Image 1 (cartoon, rainbow, N blue to C red):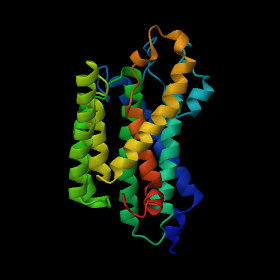
Image 2 (image 1 turned 60 degrees about the vertical axis):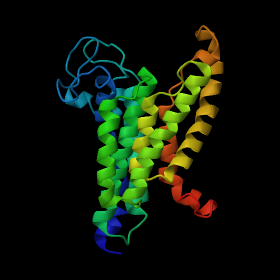
Image 3 (image 1 turned 60 degrees about the horizontal axis):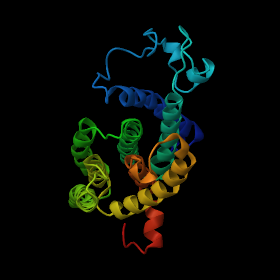
Length: 279
């Protein structure tokens, strides 16, 4: 193993990847807050939503600044949402895990290919994180993210992904049509909306990035996790909501994103268990 390959597989490199992820997580928070409001993600800089005072550079360090300031604005002491450190920490953990999977665990592979795969996969999970938190807050998956991302990840897949262009093209089409048909049948039978077309575009994005063979895993894992998580949460909080549980809208986008993460990190293991039938 060369010296550079050894460093890429070292704990220092994994920690650097985590720091890289946390920094991007701070940007993801900007996207989550501003894109649904139709605001620029570039200008103005970060500022307190209560008093409008710009956040100092030292107060904008991912995770640590939130802990140091005890989750409050230095200027007016207004509380910041716990979402900010949560997204930053989640992004750091995902980046570290992807670095280990794409780079550190394959010390004999071509460095440029390993790094390109890491960048591709981290960009993909970053989009999933942003869309998931937006969906939780607004029950919407903005077209301004999903539609360009479908094209970007399909094209980027030519350089770094294991799935063929045809598998990714079929994945995008089947992903969209699968959710679209379920939503249409649901509406025709019950005369009300169930799944939205935002979910269809998200599944198309996942198919465009990972290929059609990812879709059974993503849908099964997403549906299972959605049931296991959402039903207990709804039952525990039912006293806060008027009306029947069946009338409560539950965002499905985050569970599709979780299903995509299951495929991303456990796809090969699932393929081995199923005899390669899916993967």
